[in-house]
Image (tube, rainbow, N blue to C red):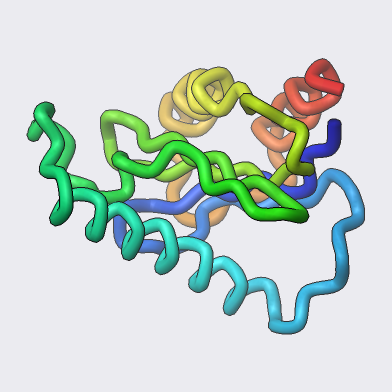
Length: 138
């Protein structure tokens, strides 16, 4: 069971947090382009799902909230949209069934939101706590 990356996006698609935990195949594009592609893919999938089958719960304004997991032959992308429309994503090996993204969000609320941090969050206690959560999943 391997977690490759954790990414957090704001509702506009800007990356707030990015951390790699295990070497994955080298990307063919810069990390910022890869992050844009991930957000765009989830947004497009969510919009398509909402068009085909509108959600019964219309309280979430983000179409991304419809997408929970995208399974590929070599990796799985897990997604969790918070009530504030932040998007928490995890790239894992295919055998990982669930990533505790809600627990990472709880840490986000505790550390980042309460401290009033804005923009990218790198090199903070938040990153250390996320690493601890990931280590307990292995």
